[in-house]
Structure formats: structure tokens, C-alpha cells
Length: 84
Image 1 (tube, rainbow, N blue to C red):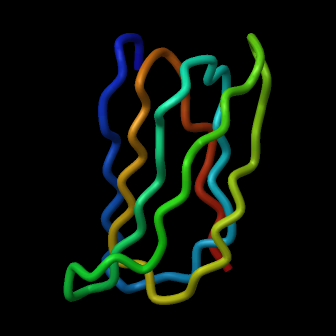
Image 2 (tube, rainbow, N blue to C red):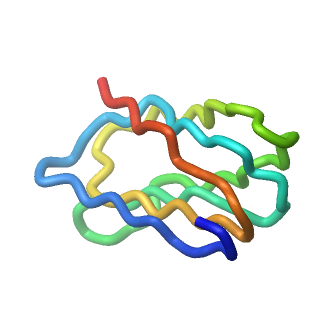
């Protein structure tokens, strides 16, 4: 993602998401929002500003996630979504 945007992950069955890998996020203001299968917010966390080319693991550790929205305010990448 170059100028920011939202990447959406929708699971067929609600999942226990342990962490999301983020790479090269140098602009403040991004977030990760997790929803259950009714659309209720389970967790929202800010993505901290990293340094150029830095990998980050954003720990969620939340069961029952049906949808994750990863919002980036500038360039960056999602390297993985780790489920249990």
C-alpha cells in the first residue's frame, strides 16, 4: 500500500488470531480493528510507527475474529496473519 488504505481479511469460520505482521510502516495513524461474526468490535489497536524497513508483530491474541481491517495511513505491507 503506497498512499494508505484498508486491507480487509474475512474468515469463513471465526478464528483465534494471535498476531499480524507489519513491514515498513513509517507513518503514524494506522490501526487494526477486529470484529466478531455479528460485526461487533472485539479489539482495536494502533499500529506504532516503525523505522524504514522494520518488521513489527502486532499482538492481538483474540479468539472469535470473523473480520480484520488493517488501516495504513501511508506505505507499508502486511507480511502475515497468524492464527492458532
